[in-house]
Image (cartoon, rainbow, N blue to C red):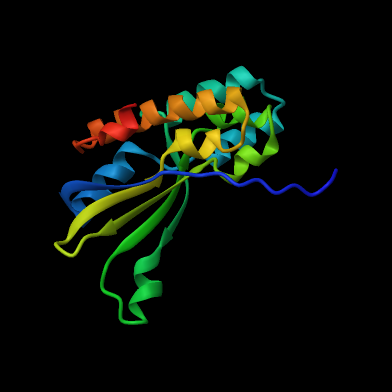
Length: 172
């Protein structure tokens, strides 16, 4: 396979939550639980079906998303004198990701989604994310782009649950 170079554009959203940083973080991690890796490993080891995996995901992700990873930048950046808090999350749903992966492995460059929650100068949380529909449209696969639009709507539902005003560009 030859090397390819593909240029594409994404839209980053920095969404003011109107909530204190620590309060928003607590609500976010309550709404988006940790991925239950042990359960998925048991399903795989016991030769479980995709239906078993999908059921487990649905139970693990009551709001459609789970957390696959966390990078807390506060201790890293504070050593350099930075006071602004920031935590990065890898958030997704592997049954949704599979619907894109089947079309091309490159989808895993962007799934799970990268979310950054950082503190504004006023101490309020800002929710930053590259808009899923623009990210996945960049792969040039209509079926993948369609799932990206679906992820936009799941993100809208999550933000509404967290009492955040959703930007109109995300609803389009």
